[in-house]
Image (cartoon, rainbow, N blue to C red; front, top):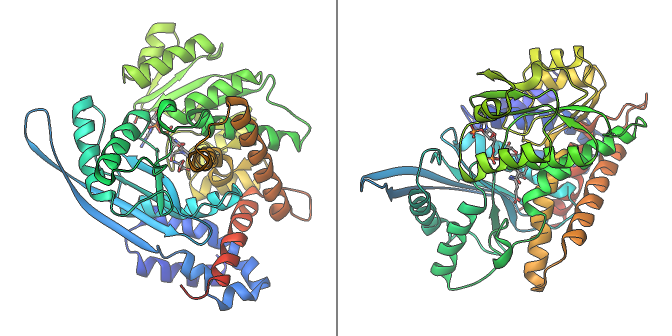
Length: 446
Ligand code: NDP
Ligand code: 2IT
């Protein structure tokens, strides 16, 4: 490791003990940025890297609620307000039993660079709770959301901090959160994104992350004169991002052969078509069942406790969670001929797996670039809320598509190496950094 990166990481680890995912996210960015900062000393003198890795504000609170049996349950709520140099804090809320401070700090840190890449005026934040929505009734989820918002409301606002969905937070949860915010503040504002279409939401927001990651894959493929048509694609997850990545890949002529959840994955060699995708959407969004049911229904293979990366494919799109592709799986993907990885999830590849992809010089699009379509469309929802005018489906989709193309251009600008290889990791990290860093310098030591 570069001694300057080593020294910086020693400081980060000492200040943030035990926050492994945060260390991982910061190190990946530091490896791209430290050489860039050495060449641009104004960032060094202003200690931008040190400041950008320290949240502006961290809020941690108790979330008590009553379950259906009348028993008191206690969860922990968080909001990390990471950086507001270029706009209000913006980023999702995650509800999952594994949620802790280190995971949310990694997500908030990534969000700062991602939001800058979108070209829209959004700072970075992230929040959530260790509440597990699985197996809870709608009423329990509502009581949890109301309690969570009863504290969060005093810290957020349409011009201050605008949360949205992430793992475990979709339309249902945003509805309960928005209802409680409105009741407490007596204000109908764009304080959350991912809202329902009848009450301030934007068309295409549910589709945006999966569509965007697919548009980004198409842009990467085009640098090698290829398209999605005829490609075999392995997708992990079966939630919001995975569902709409599948939809767009199929629309563009690719064949999606896998879907997964935390229990295992299904392999459908004929491909998941529109009807089968409808089944997954009903299974996951309405009945809230397990992906194994797909295998039972369509008579395909189910791999209990396994991830999809053992299946031969041209393109891999991880769309479930962090660290879901390890070094061994990355090597197997390459060995099986995978030429492109477009990350729908945040930090799905371990540092070793990223190393394998970069060494093989495949098209590797890191999450902060490839999955930025979700938050970009949240930004478009904020714009529509401010104007009090909705845009059509076509208008929003076209804007999303243009934003993904521009993110790709930024990555090419900052990530192209002497031999012509585009290192999208460096491209996204440096491209996302410059605007935030310049704004921080302009605003003084704050
Ligand atoms: P959902 O909750 O809709 O779906 C998550 C999916 O991932 C489910 O299939 C879930 O399976 C699976 N999963 C979650 N945790 C794990 C785990 N620890 N191990 C294995 N599988 C797991 O979330 P989203 O689709 O919204 O989010 C997926 C990823 O995309 C996350 O990394 C998120 O941060 C990222 N992302 C989301 C955006 C958005 O707009 N929603 C925007 C940008 C990035 P199970 O049901 O069994 O838990
Ligand atoms: O990780 C992400 O970018 C999201 N979960 C979406 C955030 C948002 O504000 O739409």
